[in-house]
Length: 131
Length: 131
Length: 131
Image 1: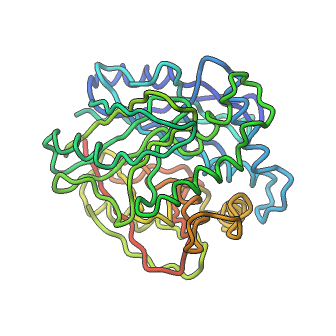
Image 2: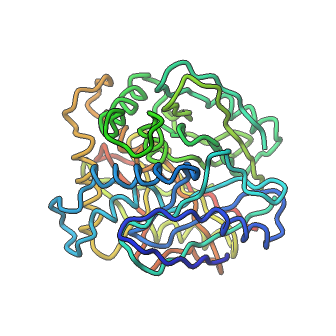
């Protein structure tokens, strides 16, 4: 398992980590298999979506903000209950396919770390499984 | 990795691809392991839910339409920002268990391709990993 | 594949199954690899989130209840259409990393079975894949 270290800069922010995950796959030497990308945090998840237009990730973040408002009444009193809910909506892990040593992504797809309670120092865990 | 080709007919539509994915698993010869099903699109995802009553998949599509309306104000100006958000809510991939050469699904479960910006020609990627 | 048997007590309830899944991983003898946790139900999903403060899982359940109300008009007429929608929002499976025979989880993370149509007898399927 390898660790990717990240530093987020805002409360809510989607970071494109595609190249960082590909570097781990390349170093592993695995040509064919799968890769599991995992967020060990309870207020930050992972998703795959469009990398070309940054507006898309902002629309996802904003829509989640509408659906799960920060100022709703929650039981959890640390001021980040909304961040926990959004994390479960995006999910903690991604499983992607590796062929010829490359993560197989659609033309418009990138891998995003979804910060919902930053700014913070964060980690992503990556495990490559060869066939 | 094998490719399943799909043609969707509506803007929003859930296609039952269970049999198509099972065919790939059967051809692979893998008896025991896992299968990763992956959508390489940023406006179409994947889910598992009830296959018996088609009303269930329509309820999921309609509820997502209520939560993420097409006519909300978005930054992404291609008229399909809602499709991107819904795709991240469903997720790009599924990881399923294979035993005795069969995808292990609950009695009522089917695998669905979730089109959110059709009609389009689409693909699903399938990778079987044997033990 | 091993089966974990659960009994839920309420209509909506998140059960911490972390220890149960770890027991399966330990019994498997796998030291390094991945584990797939799978819900074979169409009205119950899985998520990873905070285990320390039970308020977090209640906030997730309550927020999903706000977003997908039971009394919205649905096509599926069994009174549990909301449970189906919530299940797709959480997802049917989790893929986690195993190192040194232990499921790798963040400090605050636990694995939760998300009951959305209980009380019922339920199952979770677990498949460990070693490297």
